[in-house]
Length: 77
Image 1 (cartoon, rainbow, N blue to C red):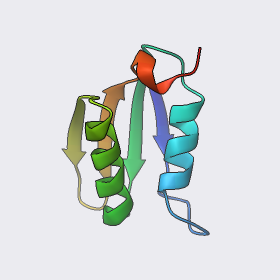
Image 2: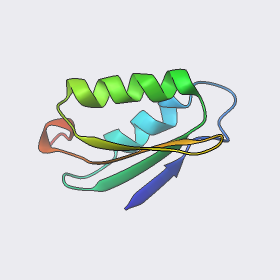
Image 3: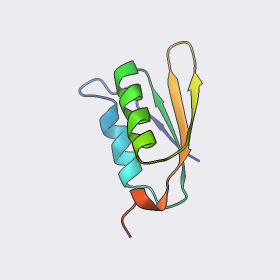
Image 4: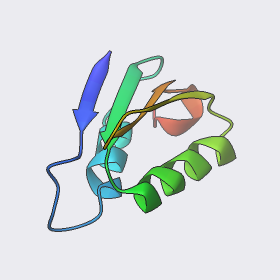
């Protein structure tokens, strides 16, 4: 599983490195994205739901994590 921790991102939204990881993933790759910005976390959940990608949400004290598998529809062939 590829783990992307965006919590150290301060210059811009944590959504940017999260989407970069999704764009560079291969079909059927398992991804785990860790965030600390609730707005970016919500936006990513909405995007995955729109793409019909199931995901698992994990909540910690200061971090939120999404785990999912990249589907063929998100990756250019």
